[in-house]
Image (tube, rainbow, N blue to C red; front, side, top):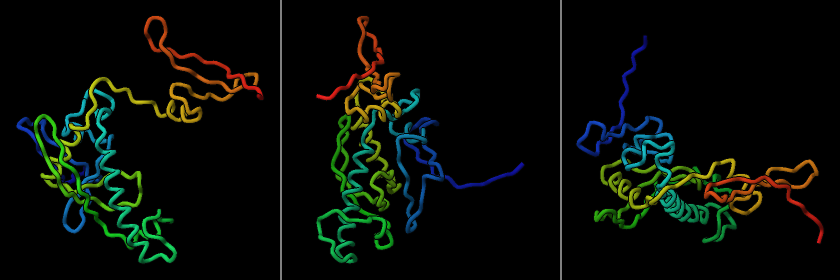
Length: 224
């Protein structure tokens, strides 16, 4: 039997014993002596508990959208810094235009970027505006890595709840989403070809009993 002793980062946010968020070690990085935590929609149920997600659902954060706004805010700040660096390091780059070969400038970028986040209100609780440090990531779709301090995490909690959708939200299956992209029509998915070589599609609709149903059809095509 092996014994392991490890130091973990623990966030407490309530009076109950269960009101804790033990951050996975893989989600925490230290830069200049300060901890930064990676935030995402999956894989960390402690974060879902922290922001009030539905732990009974397969995706507890399906109704929350603030992390998308955080990614966009991070990207705007990173792009501004990248434009400045490219103007200094790349011949031919015109300030204000998209930077080509973004990763080429990674070694010239700072590790952190400051992002101004607006004031938010949820349940009569107002918080912000606030300036937050993010890990500077050139990947536009990368998850945000944000400074792990009480004031920032308090803002994150309120921001997540302020951007929670009401009602029942059903996540689009990844496979269905990919198929819908092929047709460009929501609810109409491409499924290859039928026996006659015609494109085959699947269409979702509501039947006479008010239930969701699906119909498979061969799509006839002809020259006009």
